[in-house]
Structure formats: structure tokens, C-alpha cells
Image 1 (cartoon, rainbow, N blue to C red):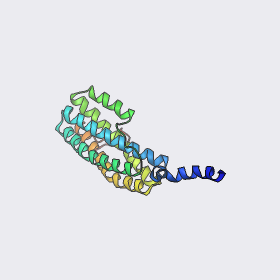
Image 2 (cartoon, one colour):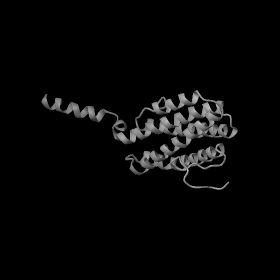
Image 3 (cartoon, rainbow, N blue to C red):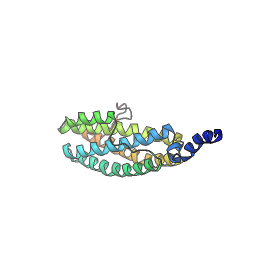
Image 4 (spheres, rainbow, N blue to C red):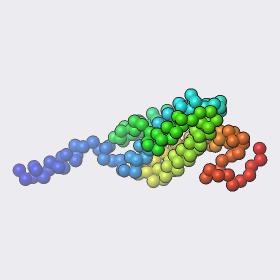
Length: 183
């Protein structure tokens, strides 16, 4: 009887889904953050497609909706394959940014939305680069590596659009321009 009682905890561990135990905390956090970022980009893009006054901003927003919708589906598939629940909504930071954008209109909206796009893509790029180096799960590492060029392209597009809205001034990586560029 004693040996049966001692083996019950072992049986419970062996019967638990293996995939739910195999993902480390950082890898699970990365999946959640990527999902939240993709959701935020799609929601913000939809808002910008409606509210933007600039055709260039509307075009950028539509591109973000399309690209991040694809990324969201890929991320959801990966999360489910790893035994994780994909996020249902953006995180509080992205929700607060959306609320701020909803109250704006015209040129002020365009500039604020594009500023969010630059900052957001810079943060996501940094997160992806970290995950590409330090993720423990090989599928997550590969997903991060695969996404880096796309997010870099989005960041470059956002910076170009900001420069266009600002009359040709290119923003620097830190947000303040220290170099002088001719038009």
C-alpha cells in the first residue's frame, strides 16, 4: 500500500501534458508579449485607418493591419502548440495608448499614432533580438529570428512616415535628432 501511495504523485506528473511543462517562464512571457503587441498594432491600425487625415498614415495603418494580423495568427498557432493561451487583448500600456489616440484627430492624431508606431516597433525589435539570442525553446527562438527583419522594415517605414509628416526631418533612434540631414 505504501509503495502505491508513493507512486501516485509520479503518475500524476507523468500524466500531465508535457508541452505545458516544457516552456520556460521567459519563453512564455515572450509569446504573450508578442501576441499583445500584434493585437495592439491591429487595433491601432484599424483606428488610424478610420481617423488619420494623411493618406500616407492611412496606407501605413492598413499595412500594419495586414502584417500584424498574419503575425497574430502565426503567434497564436505557436502559443497553442506550446500549451499557452494566446492573449485576448493588448496589455495595459497599449490600451492606454489607444485611449489617448481615440481622443485625438487630424494632424495631431497622425503624429501621435506614428510616434507610437516608432516607439512600439523599437521596443518589439529589442524584445525579438533578446528572444532570438536567449529563448530556450528552439521554435520560439526561430520565430523571433524570423520576425526581426519584418519588424525592422516596419520601424523603417514608420520613421520615414514620421519624417514625411515633419517635413523631411528623420527621427533618430533615441527620438531626438542629433544629425543634420539635407532634403
